[in-house]
Image (cartoon, rainbow, N blue to C red; front, side):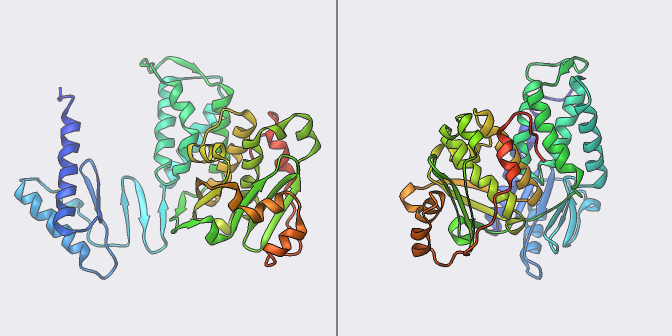
Length: 350
């Protein structure tokens, strides 16, 4: 039997080997996973050759055997850890058979009241593999992983609670039209660079601005009757969902720093979790849209006084709005009405 510390020591040595190559070359274009190393450099430059030759030199120095038949020369397309990387089309691609297998396991899980531990572990493995190219999907794996805590008999049957099935439904709906291809996300945009602002006023409604476009609407009467307008996190998060729903295609493949004057919402966005059921239902839909359009959003707190344009819009103070933001369209975009109902338990993602 092998030593239980073997993997630890091997990873420590592999990490050292990566570090020494980076230190010697002054380049960060090398990563590793256990004994698989990937070297990256600009096309037509000598950096790749320098990295590879330096790595090979240290391998000889430390008496590390290399599998030369597995060494791939400089190329723009290769497979690393089961993921196809295409630097020309700026794509990550999951193998079709992996996506098909994941769909199959998901469907069988959702049809069952109870499944064996080994079935859940297999599903977790396939979902974790998918999140290598769809990192935002990790939020929908947390409850599933928690179900296996403390269990070690692979044949034990585990009941799948509805909250976990809700997470899996998001995956199922996303994978229905997912072809296994994810485009690289570009540079990190501050929301100001996109002229993307949102705000909400409990006494009136919400406002959202993107470029010259804007959306504003009052809280529906049933929200007031259910006292949802007292949930400030819900009110401030709702316009972000509207932004993803309406302008998601224009924001596709972008990484965005979204400024918000509500610290509770900042935590919801950054942690992708909430203790409020209505907020969590909106969060599921928002993440589903972010998955669909390959958008990554990070939230950053700003004082409310600096969000004057969206603040005026959320209070329907249009005379003031035109004075401070006369570049905006004269006609706004309608708010998708189905979004209001997503706070109710009987409505699902879609």
